[in-house]
Image (tube, rainbow, N blue to C red; front, side, top):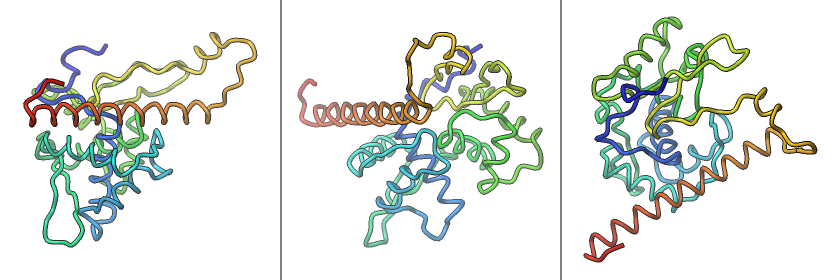
Length: 231
């Protein structure tokens, strides 16, 4: 059951899908390609849009990523790094959330790949942090879920036919429960022919558009505040 205890602290607003993608990409690249970190805007956009290890796959442009960065900077999650001819960006995920690197590895993989089981998380976190066993993954997940300042992850109800429950992050708010294949099959209209790939592409496009709209709203509100006019 998704209760108040599961929710992220009210002191932090829910992040958009693109904002979590930016944040997750910065953490991932810091640990997997440290020689290129902090990241330039070009590298960050490429990391956000890469086709592997991402769910959903996005096609965000530089303007959308810059707007996401601006919001993350206001929340303290991201900062610009000086000392280079090219503007670069670094994250402060562990500092803002007050979590260790093991926990940030789990959050990062959840932000980049979506809900996963503890076993999947252990495998997919391999390059970010090597967990000794699934029990250690579950221990950190429980710590994140029961965090005094507000839960950062939640254990989702088990899907029919699944052996393990999946976990999801709460940085974008409480996740909507996904429809299972059995449910989808029982409610499908005769003649429906959308493929899994087409549905995934549509979801990715909707996520990108929602991120763009959210970012533009925040930009307009900030500009109105600076000019002293009402939005």
